[in-house]
Length: 258
Image (cartoon, rainbow, N blue to C red):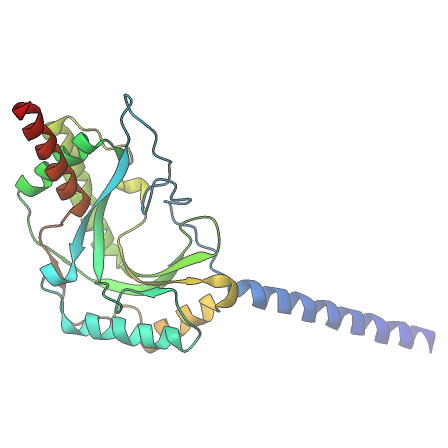
């Protein structure tokens, strides 16, 4: 009788332990555990280190971006991103969605972390005069990424494996040509940046079932089924570079006038 009660008690404790463990695993599984290589993004989006002064001059980060409005993007991918945004909203309220609110879908080509305004202007001039060759890419599936300290998480649509390889080689060649042409060395090569992606939106994961949302989007829109024809990328735009170019031109004009 005693042995039977002990076995019954041990079975109960074991089931209780398994239930608690399963509950913890279930809770943990809702959190995004994937850290972006840009973490903690101290220098801005895409840039992990904090930007410090260089020769007494402030430095900041720049990005060259392929914007949907400037390129031939298939309607299917736009429609599926809007569909994914709708699915996301069934799980909670995202902080932002790149499908609405005046935002625009885009893919970052490269990040230039912590350069002076003069260097930013040179980067912009280089990008504007560069001989761009159009590339075809394909997107694959939704993933989550932690970019900074705190609660913020991004949901991103990743380019597929072949597109990642092609775009990385394109970016590395561009970085090498930048240094040869301008003498500006790339502080962080693209091999140490986040893989190529298109952001769907951002959310606070403390009150959002991240993994369930990711799984549901990838179930409704299976990997590799986001579009039927390739996305054509041609010439990226660096908006902050453009502002740096104007600022440097104004300073030079003022210097000449004085």
